[in-house]
Length: 127
Image (cartoon, rainbow, N blue to C red; front, side, top):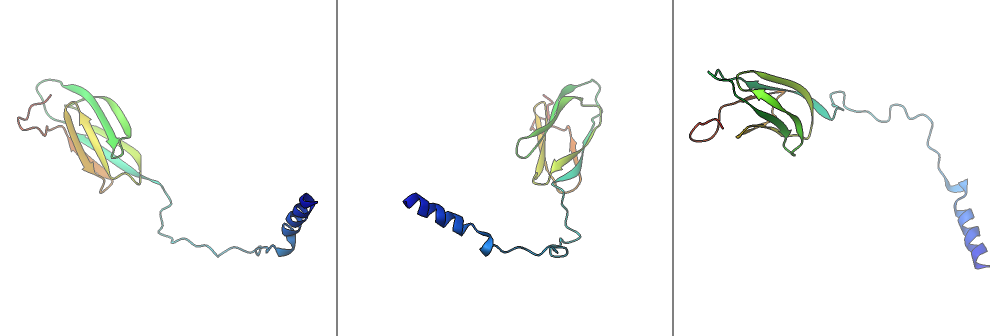
């Protein structure tokens, strides 16, 4: 008997009598600012300026975002310019370049990031 009372209450409470139906004409109710950018990525160009050297030096080049995601890894010659165009997530704030023992970070403030191979260590030795 108790089960049938509960069932009756459930059926009665789920009836269509209390439902409100939205109007079919919803056009023009939601508007986004025309200058709003819906993209979740941005185009970035990374350039690394070559050094003129009497010998050829090659090392592993790694490029990563500030959250540690590596988006490029490969062998690069220090006497060759490097250029890479890619889409990075909007939430990325910087890019880190690792070339052998050289590590440099540049903030994402524009669409072009420029790095060089000059070492940051005090004795200016390339490792």
